[in-house]
Image (cartoon, rainbow, N blue to C red; front, top):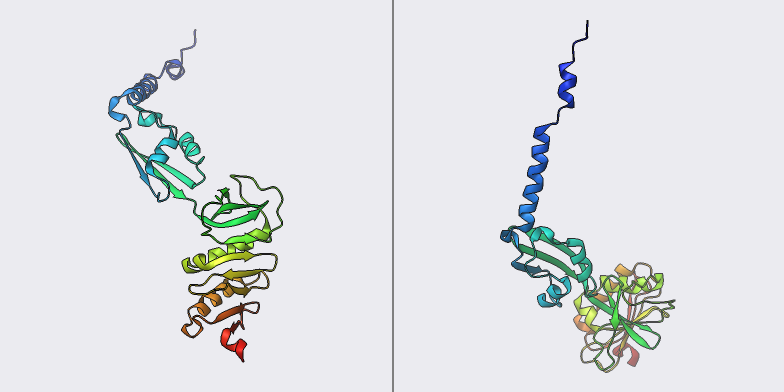
Amino acid sequence: MEPLSNPDKTSNNLPRFDLIFGAVLVVLTSLILLNSRFFVVNKVEIQGNQAVSPEDIILKARLNSDRNIFQIDSEQIKKSILHDLRIASVKIKRQLPGKLIIIVRERAPICLLSYLNNLLIIGDDGLVMGIHDETEPVELPVVTGVRLGNVKYGEKVESAEFQAALEILRYADDYLHQIISEIDLDRFRLYLDLPDYRHSVKVELGAAERLEEKITNLRAILLSPELNGVLEQIDLRAPDLPTVTTSRSLKK
């Protein structure tokens, strides 16, 4: 007697039409979305920019006209925009049916670094953004006295010594950014160009320890009305006991 066939086994060998139909539906839907004029990018919104114009960002993004929003390569757009060293980071958002939102975070110049007879423009993350134009006035603190190896355009300055200068500037407020003319890392001191002073005021820091306390003390000293116009030198080497030399004390 011949064995009866197993109906379960037979059914397993049959094609699953529901799976095939689902796969075909997905493919057709994808083709429709990718080729539909309804999803063409017709608006690009730029957010987070101040120094870089929206036109510059759109130009860097290399967005082709009549491009379907689902065909946009976000990673390629990010890479293209980041070629502009004024831009630190980029995020891309799609807003259906046809709006693309580009969110940028700009890299702010924080200081100038003296290097091989040039002044390099350094961003707030330590990246070399370019070379300062000698015809332009110097409006950023100049960092001197750093022993550096090879420094490259578009890369970060990795010197541990230079990181101390960035730390000082991160603790400084907007007013200090305006009046610090030089950060001398060889002697570890600051030079301040204060309003209505004919000379620079020297600030002794001593070492890279407890910099936050030292900068906090400096801000408090500069806010003292009785010291306005008479400062000669500030000694912050001992953060618990900052001392000030004034023109009045020198006359005694």
